[in-house]
Image (cartoon, rainbow, N blue to C red; front, side, top):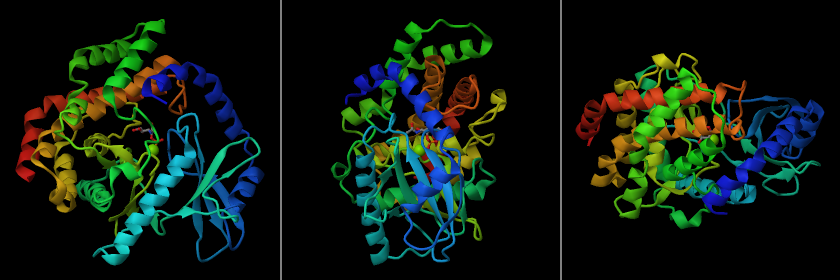
Length: 391
Ligand code: GN1
Ligand code: MG
């Protein structure tokens, strides 16, 4: 499906999304236990509870009686967003096999784990329930935790290291081996086009917050294609990327507080590593976190930016080109703004893509990202210097 078709179909999503949200709300513990049981070979299910803060899929932590594998992660894929969940599973299996083999051949000096796709009792990488929902099981990284907000500079170095390690491990897997599981993802000009279509159909309720978003978008429209142009001109090559390396997808070892893995592999597909660099920095250099309500106080912390790049380059330097450094600043600025645009558009469209806790949730999230983009722009010279000095 082309990204444009994807965009036009979304009007229909509202109904579908609401239906699936209701379905999950009505998914009783008994049902969840029965679904979880498909993925276990030993022991019994002790507990299933909601896990993490994902905005798209529904995630649960399953606790088992088995001492071999005490927990696993059960997920219901949002098939309104991920239209080909089988392709996601195929990608994950190719990726995890490739990386596991590499790690076995060359064990790293420190702990690094790859989440495993669990097979069902009949050897499948997913199962469907009576309502047609798509469920999968992923191994839980033992003795680990994730964080929603950065705590200090050493977290920053670890987050950068995790992204660098991930890019390094996939750098020799040809991009064409993986399917494009979410067309149009991080193609900023397409998000802008969709925004314009939604805006044209929306009756706005003018207020200071909405005006701030409208202004932030109209002021920056000309810069939307900077990464896509660089890609077309061959300045930035198509590579495999994570797609969503935000702070809470980096897994920390609870004892050492060092990064031990990076999870949420649904969007690993051909793209630009700059989408990842930008997304990681916009997420982790915001001390207030992307869910803060105090959006006016949000700023981009340049010391944390330096820490992340230090950690990233400690493992990624070998495969970066001069152009990769040149476009790093643009990526940081663009990805923060792009997420603001995505949240704001979803707010205007009636909150049909990102899960929300209240009707204004996506509006506030958008304000956070627009404020962050503004802070990044205000520090352009200093950020460019940090990048230059780290080469
Ligand atoms: C979504 O579902 P989650 O939380 O892993 C989104 C990302 C956004 C993120 C913002 C497929 O990720 O692109 O950056 O929310 N994923 C998709 O928190 O759109
Ligand atoms: Mg994700």
